[in-house]
Image (tube, rainbow, N blue to C red; front, side, top):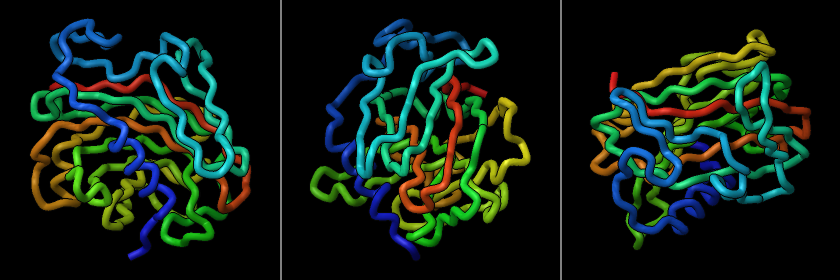
Length: 228
């Protein structure tokens, strides 16, 4: 199976920088907790106060904007490979559902996630789980992706470290905010054969076009964890 070195390096970087944290309570660290919902991102403060930007090949332009009245992060590929990440810590067993909105403006025409020379994604939401500090390459993660039309929605592209769940593909739904809701526990079990032993520790956003060099533009809305 194709080993995506670019994203593996990014995931390892994220977890090597994480320090132990305790589950957050209502209002801690900018999170807002309600009975049914935990806001993992709210997009109500400057990006550099909530996220860290990691570059591999040039920098994707990430900008905090409002689009159709919604707070959002606008991502513009610049023949680049870079992502945003932030630390999180919550009970995934108590809040198994992940929900967010995203919007595509422009997707790659020739992107293919299984071919190194074409491996680009328009929008990617990564959830990263703890790894062994002695074996950082054993990081496990789930990646929810909007990519080009060479894939189909519902497809899972497997590799050892970051299975891609293709939720959207191509430009058929471009220009509209699309809501996604996934059971993170069940998706994890589906690809790894068991439920996660620990809670997720990092959340990442990844838009790139360093391989295809084709224009890509999209938006990420707030992300929240939900009980049911």
